[in-house]
Length: 448
Ligand SMILES: [Ca+2]
Ligand SMILES: [Ca+2]
Ligand SMILES: [Ca+2]
Image (cartoon, rainbow, N blue to C red):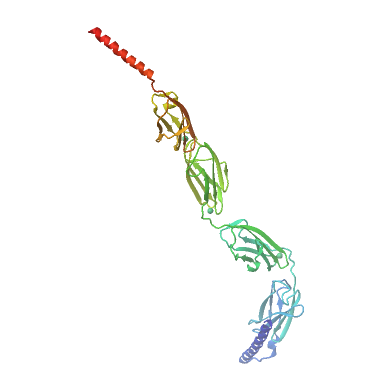
């Protein structure tokens, strides 16, 4: 390629020389000025802008020759091998200039350190000059000027661009760039230039923390490196989920001291500081709040409670749960005159009523009654129990019990007796009646 380029230059150079000569001849004839070789007498000069160059430098070459003349410049390495060539046409006053770029990394191709020869050809003249290509003395590592995502930052996409910008006091050797993401070398799929490296994850990153290691060297092998972390976290639109509560909705407890607890979760994380619990609209002090649960010990009077639990995830999505439970630590009340133990029935046909009530609600199906140890079935309504039946004379013992809906038990035991009037008593009554009648008759007769 280079050889073909040089050949084509030579061809063009020759063609232009022919044209150039004809052009001068024509001008000379037109001006009646004799054309002589003296026209070539202008000396060919060549200078470089510096004596010593370093890798990556640009060599500026300038000089003079015949006006509007072809000039070819060749660079030869210390071994005499041509490493570059260019040509130009000088200006109307004979000046020319050219520039050659020295590779960043030496050795490169035929480029080596040492003394180079610059050779100029123009209008049949040759001039040489030299320069030195010297190794750079560089002990300063490159500078990593910026990188992203930032240290400790959180990004909300799964394939964030990982970028590093760098520079060097002399020259970066960007072939030494190395990017390691979460322990995997991803350099081969990164876009790398002399000033920056960019890597877009080929497969989506997982949510959570990630670590990047980056390194780059300058042309002298001085290394700069950086390790940093960032976090991937997608936007969160899902509110937390309250998975369980105690006491459960609709439950009835016969305790006055209870430990309320709840469990909850979120696709990301619940913010523990957002957790609030209210009972009948009053905030409850909690003994423990974690990102997944709460507990609160409370002393409660009997009654129905509306509990409200609200909490948010770390993105501010809120979950609210309302539920009710009942506290009833007080047993039912059983009352009635029959409980006084002094009731005497004069008939074997007995009938008595007991009154029952509760501060919250009775469990009527729990009611039981025994008379002399034998279960009996009284008639019931919401507030009372009535027994009707025939019993033998004498004393009878009754036990009645009932629970409220919380399970608190009330129980009463009492006795009564059945004592019908005896025949003796009837006689006394008859005697009394007869006596009364007799007294009445005597009274009447005396008046008559
Ligand atoms: Ca350096
Ligand atoms: Ca969430
Ligand atoms: Ca009760």
